[in-house]
Amino acid sequence: MSANEDLEEASNNMMMYCAACGIAGADDIKLKKCTACKSVRYCGVKCQKEHRPKHKKECKNRAAELRDEILFKQPECGDLGDCPICCIPLSIDAQKSILMACCCKMVCAGCNIANQKREVQESMENKCPFCRHPAPYNEKEVKINLMRRIEVNDPAAMRQMGQFCYYEGDHRGAFEYFSKAAELGNAGAHYLLSSLYDKGEGVKKDEKKEVFHLEQAAIEVDDTKLKKCTACKSVRYCSVICQKEHRPKHKSECKKRSAELRDEILFRQPESSGLGDCPICCIPLPINAQGSTLMACCSKTICNGCAHANTIHQLEENLEESCPFCRHPAPDSDDETKKDLMRRIEVNDPSAMRHMGTCCHQEEDYGGAFEYYTKAAESELGDATAHYLLSCMYHAGKGVRRDEKKKVYHLEEAAIGGNPFARNNLALSINTLED
Picture (tube, rainbow, N blue to C red):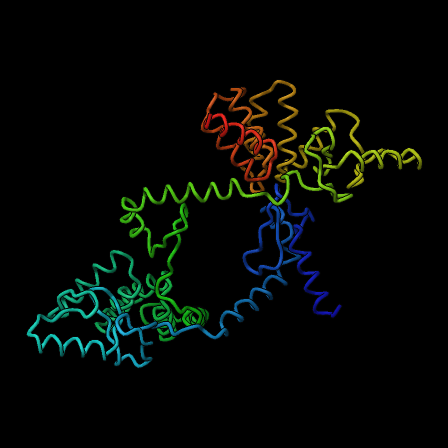
């Protein structure tokens, strides 16, 4: 195996564990990447903060490398795009294309001249070659058209209005319009902002901000960043305003598609049972809860085989009874067990929260059980079994009012997480409804 392959394998292994506490990613533990360097993962915000002093220098270096990769990557196309009529790439020369104020489409000079000739030959009114809106007669009408486009968050219109302000000597107004357009991803606006920071027009001279906007202008290649509808994932929008306007037409289709997507996730064969593997022998844990034990000290679920083997080993060697995974001394009483669980709860361990909820449930403290199950289910890492136990509480009405909708919701969430009991109960409830 080469040195590069060794490094790649080591990097992949690092991404499987929390960089701070070393906990492995599993169905109930979702590790999140460091947003800056993308090279390490964390199980929670607390671990990320604790690891920050050690990771800070490496993170900055890797983040700079990633930015350079994006910055010097060959763009797929120019930031101007293609003419929307002839579909030929627009020229870099600004005099060979024109921005239509009515629709803010950049049309090449050839298509614009061809449209004007046709209108003269057929004695037609002068209109936009793309949207057929009547052409403005003066600068005032141009600005009115641009303002209509600005109201719907069109970055090209904002940039053009900023240029009008600049030519009129209103450098501060130009800066504001360029800033708004740049926030929406307009590469031209980033370039014009870098020019303002360089000259100190409408804003204080700032070398760092000049370079930043210059880099952003080099990176950006698309005026409009379209965002997916978070529910159905089937359509995209350029702004919240457009999404709200389209909502009445899209609502029915969106609900159907989002329901289909949820069913796809719900009835997809899970990669594992949701219970995971024993961290010692790496054999999948049995569905029967009596076949495994949760260690309160480290919140690891160990199969009975490994637990018994550890007990025999300690007896033969006259060793102190300790956890087979982390070697923490075994608790002597329920109070010590709860103390160990509370230590794990302090670091947002969902398994510990769920187990503490089970302890409360056994003591008939249903309100406390409900609170711990809810925390485990809604925690950053999530817990499929906690969702299942919540569905049982909503079904029985213990610690909370009976609620069929919430029961089904938590049952589905547990089934998506791979919990076998939830999948079984959900199948039974569907069969009952069909009968």
